[in-house]
Image 1 (tube, rainbow, N blue to C red):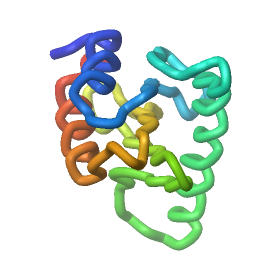
Image 2: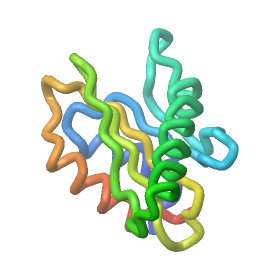
Image 3: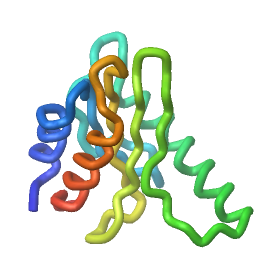
Image 4: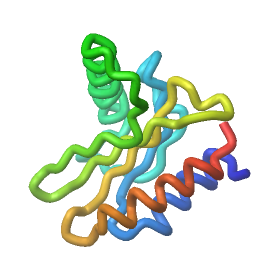
Length: 124
């Protein structure tokens, strides 16, 4: 089991192209931990904004009667990928991992695989 700081460091060090990572509580919009980001990319603001994305998708799924679980939400920008992974099990309800990737360096399939592994090792 890895603690939060270790897990966020692993996101940035083991996932090619990763530039920022956060663990976010989507019930409050608060980032429980962040690593990376720049003065031009406020990770706290991004975490809060992506909380709205997660809530909207969950609400839409409920309205549609979908009984599925969200694994990932992917937002592609011209130079970045934003990957949101909802945490399952072990007290992870209401939490998601948020990862920012440089689109020119990242491999999405590998990033998803690594993020899933990090999620499984995360101790919340």
